[in-house]
Image (cartoon, rainbow, N blue to C red; front, side):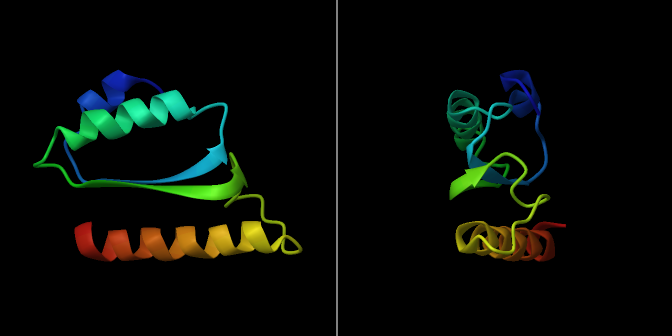
Length: 87
């Protein structure tokens, strides 16, 4: 989902775990996506911003970095709970 049209066309509940630094899902795009989805009250959405992370933090783990490991665990718990509730 790389442009605002994707969020305008979204018709199902969606959860987003976002890295603090992300050249692909920039702060501006994330803010725009949040605003678009906030106006779609019938579609549940939630954004979780993980401080101290970069794009790909959950797929390229650094077990020696407590910030990344904490973010990874929080992201997994968040998505698991979202999936149980909405899928």
